[in-house]
Image (cartoon, rainbow, N blue to C red; front, side):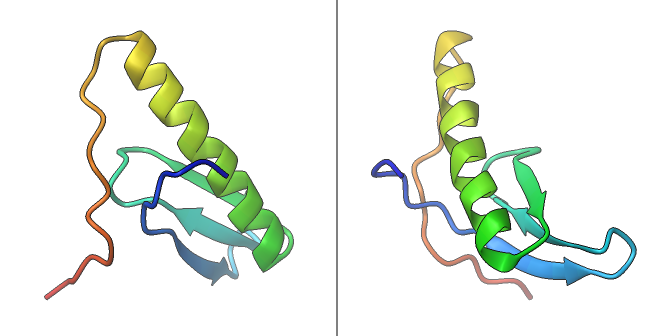
Length: 71
């Protein structure tokens, strides 16, 4: 994993029968896996791909804000 420190939220989806890993700070960045660690690994790869693609397209790459709080 690179130095990107985006929050990753991982939860079990009964419907998908998989762990889902979402990266809320990066629009559309999510992954899944049969195990918690597999979903995390896929999310980390997704973050790198998201950042590389955004950079190649000249889009803004948000700075990681750390833990997000929801009301």
